[in-house]
Image 1: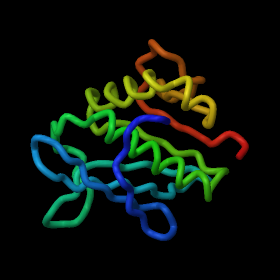
Image 2: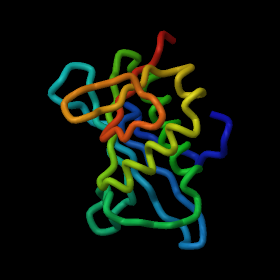
Image 3: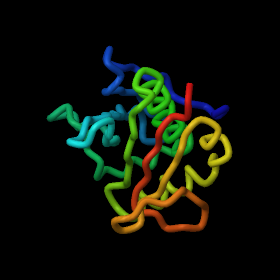
Image 4: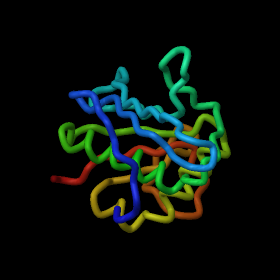
Length: 148
């Protein structure tokens, strides 16, 4: 995607990333973790602010640093990096709240034509998976790299 992104720092296995959001609220450290699940080649993406006390992700904070698009583009770049070395991986994401899921859905919708060039993308509706399409209130999302 040709939109501004933050500089990502990653652990060697590309499952934990961090970057710094900069805006009116100052510099805020963000974390992205891509964790293996009990399903083969299925991973969960977790994202949020770094809790200063625990060092863990806090996905309940609303930073409002006026850089939402740049932050989401940075998260997408982490998914690209991870799936470059794990091309069989399915990466699942959903928001910690309905409004966050809606925000992610809006981001996907805005760049859907670009994302579809590189990823298969499906939306979650209840216990079903459907090919992602705009206008559907999906509860979660899963992507897999197309052949690279």
